[in-house]
Structure formats: C-alpha cells, structure tokens
Image (cartoon, rainbow, N blue to C red):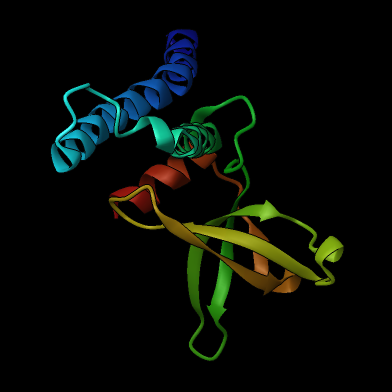
Length: 146
C-alpha cells in the first residue's frame, strides 16, 4: 500500500505542475485576448511565454519540496523562538550550514503556515535548533492542520 501511495505522489509531482500551468495559461489566454479584442485565440499570450516557464518551474519546485525525490522537508526540528518565554516552533531544516553566505553557525529553518502551502524561512543559531525524533510527514501534517 505504501508503494502505491509513493507512486501516486511521484505522479502528482509530474502531472500537477503541468495541469496547473495549463489552467493558468488557458485563463490568461482568455483574459488577455478579451482585453485586446484579438480574433486569434492565444495571440495575446504568445509574447509572455517566459511567464509560463516561471509558473511551471515554481509549481514543480514546490511539489518536489513536499513529495518529490529530493524532499527538502525531511528534517523536523523544534526551535526555541522566544528564549525569554520559552516559546518554541516546529519547522524543517532547509540548510544546516550557511557558511557559504558568510553566516557560519546559523541554521535555516522553514516554518510552514497552517492551512496553506506558504511559509517562511528564518535563521537561528544552531544551539537553538533541536532535531525531533519524529516522522517528517507526521510533523508536516500536524503543522498544516493546525
């Protein structure tokens, strides 16, 4: 059963960006042609093809980060966000070392938003980031569901 779910998710990584890109392009065809009053469907969007490439690549990267072969959210952590009150947050390490940016000793942690695919990345000193002995899918489900 787990293999079937894995195949489904891999297929989703391929099909979802194509479907999303196709849908957005179709909506743009209709909108731009309506604004310009062009008799040839799609003529208004032909000059905007770089946008299509950007849309497809962004959607594919987002899906790969969650369910692709190169998942980036596979290291759940508990971060001490507010030391004075002991406030902590659940997140995922995206970069364990930022020395290449001149930020040695800092760790990049992604915090997804509840009920959304958005989130933000924050940098913390490594000593405030504690690895969680939990499955990343369980942690993500907990965060996203609120």
